[in-house]
Length: 219
Image 1 (cartoon, rainbow, N blue to C red):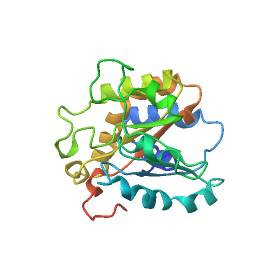
Image 2 (tube, rainbow, N blue to C red):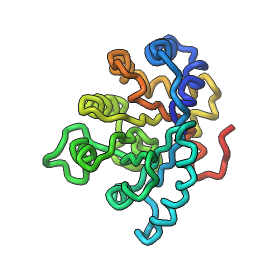
Image 3 (cartoon, helix red, strand yellow):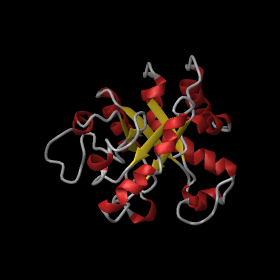
Image 4 (tube, rainbow, N blue to C red):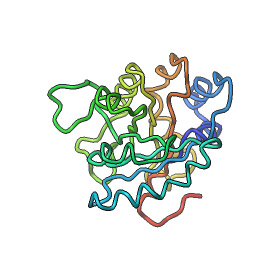
């Protein structure tokens, strides 16, 4: 996951009025630079729980660099509880999604209350595959829904990794179209960020959707 370290790079290239507003609301209020963030999203992998120890061990050496960067891992929903205590101290585990209504009659969902109870402090939302890429979920999660989830997460004291990015058809239209797409995914959360005292609680994670699983390297 490309996290807040790259956030200001994205914002610095925004040319629309909303882009400038977003940059001001998030960038100018920072009193100090935060550490770079490195993250890994396991999506719906691995197929077997027997593979988990090896995957976790891949992050062991990251613990040596926690003074220089923050490290996040986003396991699949079924595996979060199994692996959350298997990583070296200081490596954060974040679920890949949550709802915006808490515990209750929400089949298939996860609540912030459950995430907090398990000792986790961060949750990932807005990934392109939740926003409708590749046909899942149906219907796609909207920008408005993402804003509702973000507010819910923050109100309950957690941190959020908020994903944005552009698909290939947008990328092919050029940089202005890319920036406009990213800005559109941020518009609904600008008021939330403006009112957030500690801006470091939200990480804007940019990922070029067209590079996911295609073998094409973003540059």
